[in-house]
Image (tube, rainbow, N blue to C red):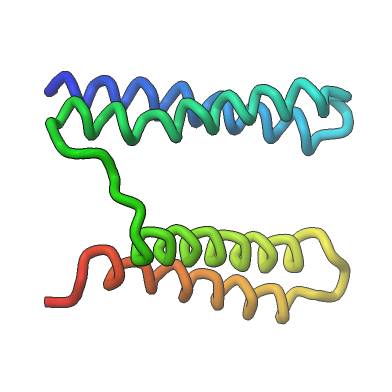
Length: 123
């Protein structure tokens, strides 16, 4: 395993665990640890965000240039994830919203599928 892959693996694992544990702490009222969960989730998000420039530096690639396409791709990814999450909430949490929740979730999955040709292109 190459060093850059190993570092990305470690940072992704640590960041993902911190973020997931922080979200559990925030969303489970039985734990009574909302403030600590926000801090832990934010720390996990920082580690995950820091992984990108660290990996690019180790690969010898230039830093990411912020262009309109980059911002649009990020906005589409965030929007798709939020729509998918809304569909999941409608299905599992809200009463009587099973079918509309499934439809909203499918719309979110469709938005996320749009990222593939946007990022990789069609051949």
